[in-house]
Image 1 (cartoon, rainbow, N blue to C red):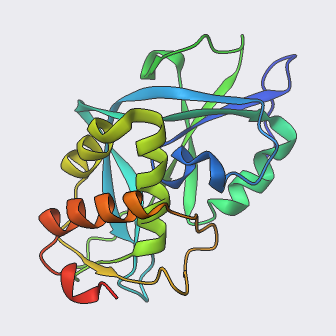
Image 2: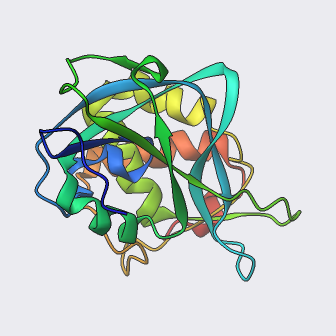
Amino acid sequence: MGEGCGVNGLVAYFGYGSLVNRDTHRTEIVGAYPARLKGWRRQWVRRDGESSRALLSVRRDPASVIDGLLVVDRAENLAAVDQREERYRRVSLTPSDLELSAELPAGCSLYVYEASADQASVRLEIIQSYLDAVLQGFLREYGRAGVERFVRETEGFDATVIADRKTPGYPRAVRLEADEEAYFDALIMQKISDFAPFVR
């Protein structure tokens, strides 16, 4: 899965969750800039059939547009990104699928990562260290309005948040400032009734 991007040897992929947080990137990217993806909706889905743990994915929805970060990377790094996103399949996009804040390199292959949506009726568990990384990314790229839009527009927030900040379960956990922690916690407590009992 090492498709290139014309003569530039570049690829671009749209991040809508933890990839929005540049601190979680593990490849030497070429650049990244805010963008919006048209015709897709963000949702929490079950990570796999053996667990109730949740991850973020997207599903097609012609009426929806979502914020994110378009990451321009070297084609040689795509295999490493695929490994990072091993629970997802890489789906091709076209430039018309995106609202861009900067010009895309000519001929660049575009992708988004989509997880399989498990329709089992279980209450999902969101790992707080993962959610923290996502929210911090949106805060940096879009400000508080973007964070609140993310929470409002993402399906599946009727979940339980597992507080794991002291011993993060997310492998690319980030460091939060005290004001970020307070803001994220207050926001999520408004959204998820089962959040408060898990805060330590």
